[in-house]
Image (cartoon, rainbow, N blue to C red; front, side, top):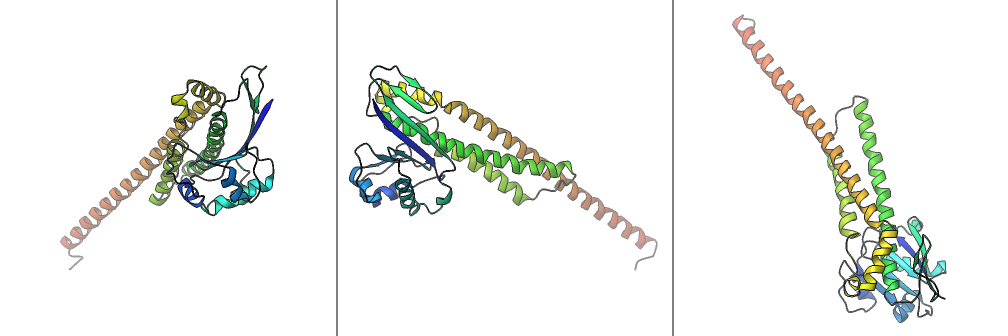
Length: 278
């Protein structure tokens, strides 16, 4: 039985793959759709130790990193420090906050099987490591985004509590800040993680496409994406309600100012007619 182990981390919203590729002497322009795959001598130069042929690290533009057959914590820590040099926003103290472990088992006597902890295939294919890594990378990135969505909900709940207590004034800056948070949340979900996009190999190989579809279905990627989209739409509707209330309050305030000015003008006119004012 052949086995590969995977360990995925979501450490940032975005990683510039081209900066890392240039540093490693890789003469290629990376697009959003493909990961940077580091192995062999390139990985050896980064970790400063001999690497097994099966050991790889895949870095994804949407902020995830997947280690294949790396069981030593010092290798992971060393590589994360390397990436941190290009993306200083990575919190090295909390890289294990969003992580997942998985493995691939190859057994000629076994049938295809997907579980929470491993996938079993009868014959090994060269595209398995990249496709499994891609699914895991997107899954941990979604986990990170799902938690961020919860934090946005919590902040909006505080604003709702303020409304219920009668504090109706909401500043433009606060409305803009919360709306920007929601927009960033939606942008990270759709553009960075690219849940609906498939690796190129799935379009040229039917077996690769079928394997990827079964993996994404088991990890409920499309369902999680749909739920996030629905939550985002709810957040927008809540913000629209806040904006409507805020504008109504400001409109009412302006109307009262106009009424007060008219009353003052009428009183001044009356006082002048009565001779009380020069």
